[in-house]
Amino acid sequence: MKLSTPAAQFAPLYDGTPALIAVGCGMELDGIPLRVLRLVRHDGGHLLLSGDAGVEEGAALRTLAIPPSAVRAVWCGDEAARRDAERLLGWWEEAGGPDSAPPLVTGDASTLLHRLLAQAFGEIDGLHRRNAGLQRTLSTLREEWGRSVRLPPEAVELLDALRLSPPRLVFATPRPVGALPVPLRHGRNPAGAAEIVQRLPAGARGLAGLDLHIDQAPKGSGVLAVALTGVETGETIAEWVLSFGDLRSGWLPLRLPAACTRMDRLLDLRIGAIGVVTEAPRLSLAQAGLLDEYAVAPPARAVGQPAMLALRLWGGLPGLEYGAAAHLAPHSAPDHLVWPLTQPVLAQVRKGREFEATFPWFGLLRGGRILLHPLHGVVTAAHIPLDEVPGAVAVRARAVVDDPRCRTPIACKLVVAPPSLTVDEAEREEGILASSGWMVLEAPRRPLDLAAVLAAPWSGPMALHLFTDIPDGGHGLYGRTLFSDFELEIDSRTAWTIPPLLPAAADGVAATP
Image (cartoon, rainbow, N blue to C red; front, side, top):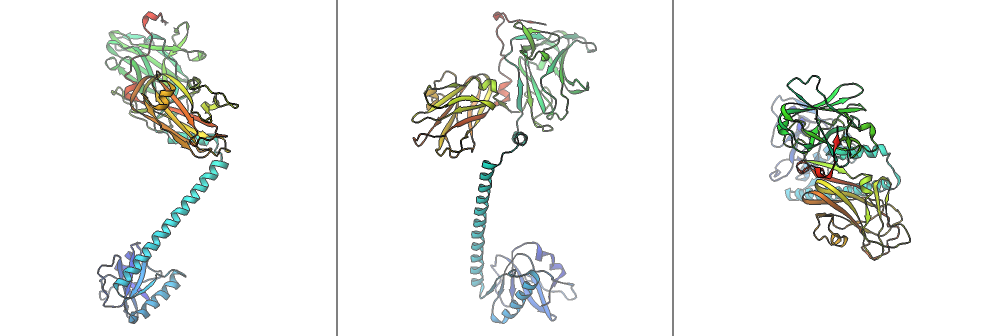
């Protein structure tokens, strides 16, 4: 069989639009929800035409070597056209391969529409079956990975970094206990001006910004100059020049345009001030503790011990932008920040209720994990006190039953409450700040994310309450439940407007430059 089509109608045959091939004349084509192609005889062969289009005299023809795409059926209205239709299907099998030809429909338009409708329902059923098979395959694969595959720690760390959008706190000094005035040079020429030098306890790679705590805002006119430099190279990584009129007491956020991609291992923060008849700003100091190598220069002491500037360092994925770096915008930090709770903070965890058991049911484990094994007939509880939380809007944690032998569902809950509430009040959710609600761990080693979202930002002390229970009243054998990955989401606007966290001058705290 020789099958051709006008050159102008060749390309649409293969654009993927669902089509129908009608064979014969006098057929009612109105109301057919498909593109209609007509098969007609022409010059000893056959032509495939689009709709009502004809063939202009002398028009170029192109021979078809492969069948058209997305043809749903071949329709012949009577027995006279059936012979041409069967010849077309025979050519189709030769050109396209076995079982490639569309079905042949004989009858009126109503018969055709019924056949097309049945074909559509069959396609939908097949799609549902394939989707169900895909879901079962994915579930099986996820189950196999969860039981037998252990990703390298480096890959897990990279995946965690990629899924994080806000910057994360990587270092924070203890509560400020003193102050140090910034060396002030009068006049406009900063050459030779003294400065404060603070070695940072973090490298440059991934550094997204830092916060300085200002004990007392300056008075008068002038600027505060802050520079971040690499010790090995001597190059300046970032600079901030801040007008005295824009400074206030409290945390001062300094941000980089994007998380740093440099590989400098040692960083110095250099701070100076220039003004005319002004009172210089005073930066807060914190105890350096065992970090003597990070003591501030010129040397200063806080409560009789070496001191360092009160600061917080924020990190992110190198090269990723985390917010505007122009200073000073009213709030130049990102709207939300993530503050992971580290081991020293989690070490304050205490039992919420006292119970006796023949096995360990409570404790702080390595990696900041808290064990809270459910007990028969009671709701076990633990709480973590937090001091001076700046603008918290949400608290998140992860719970998992790590013993694969457990066959009992375990319920767990995370509650955020003021420190004055008792454990019973927190469990009943009376006067709390937020709660994740009871959530059930259906299977072991399948982590469950708990989130307690506060209705409004909270600044000040708070307590995190953890609860576990056995919903079906069983004994919960092997129900070893672990809580981990605690983090606070902080609202930047609230955090930067809280008053300085410094003791009163009457407390006798002093700093000696």
